[in-house]
Length: 269
Ligand code: ADP
Ligand code: MG
Image (cartoon, rainbow, N blue to C red; front, top):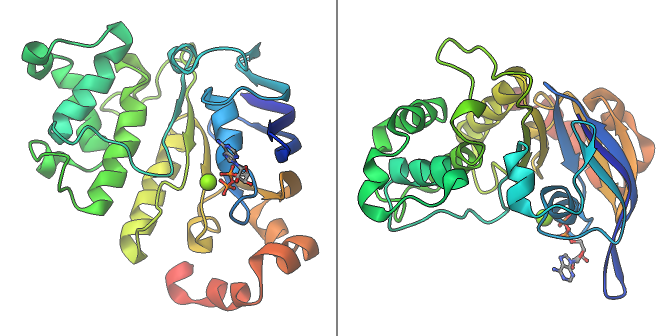
């Protein structure tokens, strides 16, 4: 389980995160929402290790991780994606996964990459729905495929044993996984967005703790088990999607008036 306690992060005089506490359990799919600049990405960076918190604690599986380097957090099962998709463009889709899959053991030499983690990378490729594009270069991938690849790379970074097996059985409980997904569906529309969010949700159902940010409410309501609302660095509310939809402060400060109309639309059911 992820436990964030009184997390604070300053950038100079800017208090980007201001005393935030929340938890995410194994198997839970939790959305972190809020306006631009609310501190969502900074929370992720403090949890995954790209930023060092100014105060507070981050615990994963019962242990403090907030002073560990990102690679050491990854080795403990904490993986993230970034708001702007980051892939190795000179490599194929499959090679990107092979590279990340084996990176924990040290980077494979270029000439053995194609023989590295073939089975596990191929299984993961299918899991994120990219089998038809296995040998396409990452450069020039359609945007939706790139977002899927990025998700696959975050999973690959957890290593071969961290995936559910082909029968869908969860990875061992000794290898808990935390997926921090910063706008996993950003820039996607309609069906593509909803399909990606179903994939995200299925990863939680296989036992991962999933925390994701998102601006489109159709990727929050109907997907998340629980919603955290961050406004100006503070947790303004947390609860079930229905509780959040009714929350007066969240409605007036974030969701706005177009929200009810959007929720009624058939494609958002
Ligand atoms: P969100 O992801 O919710 O849009 P961010 O976490 O990116 O918000 O940003 C929160 C606040 O922290 C903003 O005021 C932003 O300008 C500031 N901030 C974020 N990262 C940095 C950084 N590396 N250096 C300085 N200020 C930053
Ligand atoms: Mg952000």
